[in-house]
Length: 431
Image 1 (cartoon, one colour):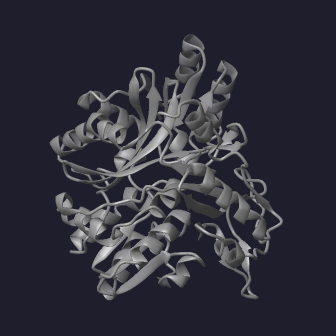
Image 2: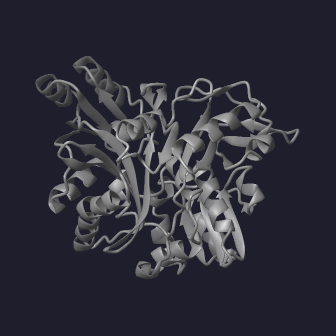
């Protein structure tokens, strides 16, 4: 198969590495890719949201399957354009991608399908939103209704924090058009986990689960980010519980989407809160998470490419999806200043030495080559250092022991990724 993978982050590097192992692969192109994906296929200088150029390239190169990585091209209609051109695409239509493109759309689907989720209200102006949080009190969650690259959610522990978030999004346009409408919802309490499944129409096949660490600082402090690390599988959320969550929170959504005439085909990423009353939906995303994908895909034993092709073809019942029993961890190395204004241009060396250590995998995200051919930082989240092990403790030690081999003066990373899961396993061995 000739494959076009769309994206340039750590998620796409991990996806490219999995696809490149497939015996069915003839050629792999990545648009636009990064220095890591360049070692696995051919990078193509096309932006992820340039749908006409992506489709034209797919036609010219006789692409058999387009694989979207991030959400932006899906919300821009990439899958629709591919299907109009007769090119299979392992991603949802623009209409189905509204599950991620609009928080209020997701809430309406949940209400229609009786999916457990937080109580919510939508606001198009700041004044009534401010009045609402003053009446309801805190903690409370403020969400930009549109796409905000993982930075549109504020868990406000005080009314003052909620007011600041509303003003920032709605009055100051800190998130652009994404924050012109907001969804305000009750703050669910419990452990947050990420559940992934391949979906085709009303069929869902479990991929697995991971637990992300969203905040920039140790102890889950500071602002939210796109994700600073993940562990897989989460403590206390085994495959039986994952399957039960699919029945409760994903399969009813697929049925409702089909009823609306907008069936879903692609990867669904359901963010869940494991509350005292059972799992409840936080949000849907219409693609793999980052850095969850990196932690998940290094445990993959089966061939990813046929599974993606079956999603595009709607023949998911026949997909073979198998993961090892290993534990895994991903640790994001970000640039100093992230998630604000990250430092750029710092030279990075030592990746080969780090990745030579047992069980370690390194995925590029915000990297590029400078005029001298040196690898340099070119984004907020720059690298993901991952490792597998028979236990989470072993995987964690391997990943953290590999980081000192990487030389990059602007690197910052959390030193407590996986700590919470290790404590949970120690306190509740039966989990």
